[in-house]
Each structure stands twice: as C-alpha cells, then as structure tokens.
Image 1 (tube, helix red, strand yellow):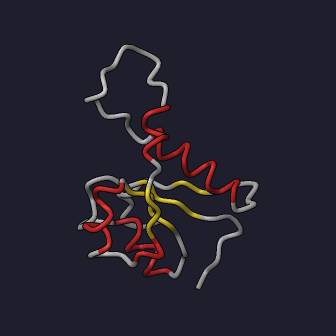
Image 2: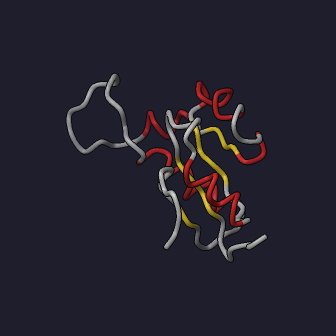
Length: 108
C-alpha cells in the first residue's frame, strides 16, 4: 500500500459503475475516500466498500453560493463536495489534502 502524506478524496456523482479513479487507486494501492450524495450511496456501495464512501452533507449544497441567480433545480456542480472535503480534511487534523476527479484512467 502506498500511503500518501495527505488524504485523497474523490468527489463523484452518477458514475458508480465507472469509478475510474477509484479503481485505479485500488490497483496501485493508494487509499482514498469518495464523496457521494446520500441518494446515490447504495448504488456506489454496490461497487465500493462503505468505508471508502463519505456522504456529502446536503447543507453544503444548500449553503453553496453560485455567484449568480440560479434556482434550486440547477446543479451546484462539484463546489459543495469540494467544500465538504476541505472541512472534512481539517476535522481529521490534516493541513492539506488531495482532491481528484472521478474519471482518471491512469497516471502516465
């Protein structure tokens, strides 16, 4: 196992079956946690163990400032998950963390 100095997080939405980055990190032995929305947890848990999944606190989506006039039906993008990751990393005592896209096939 290759433990990075700082934790690795993968925000993901609607890509449970693909999980390219997570699968590659599993292959090379790097620990990570995926951040998923609560309504998609069970789907992701079919492909990844629960201990590798973190549920995005929905308050981060509610509080996210889109810097414009957007209604509640519009996606907030990955910003809320990235803010959640930042706070989660700090809460575990980390000074830094890695955030990776969920569609990386490999590192060359």
